[in-house]
Length: 254
Image (cartoon, rainbow, N blue to C red; front, side):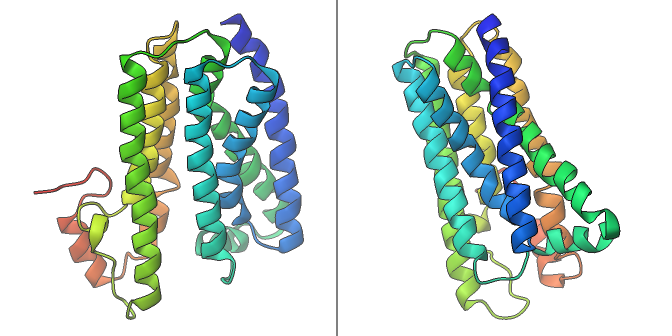
């Protein structure tokens, strides 16, 4: 546990530098939605730092790879989705609402707050780096849970990107995985972090780090994920029908 405490300060400092850099980029580009690209890449940065500075077991390297696959895929997906569009509507709303306080509120409430949550969510990876670990049944189960989550997020994102290119006005995505859950990509992201938590669960103090999957679950289910996205469709009657028959996150296959 002492090793974990020693690791927190340099990781936190690295995240502060990282968040500040992306804030500067956002001011230069005049769009705050670059924070969405920075989200996944931030985890990759921390894993690189840990790999280069700390000894790693087989389990640790496997987790680094899982985080890398998730982070790189997500950031590339968001980049290609946004590159020919205007700033995401959620950030446009904040830009208008914050007025003259826009810049400092962006720095604090978007970039530094994101870095804080990133530190909490990646904490299972930090504890894995700090404690010797070997492959166990928890590793296998956690890996399988992560794979299911990755399937939901990656396939859900792909299906939505194809649908957006051919959809008619006011039409709502209800095919593929979106037939079973209104947000398969969010469900997948949540599931992946529960999988990583399962991997570290048998380690000393491992149960403490349930704060990681709980945090990403709360953020996506109740804060910045489902509520903010669905606000856009609150006056869409087609979406209202879809909402009544399809769960927000956990898939319903019957």
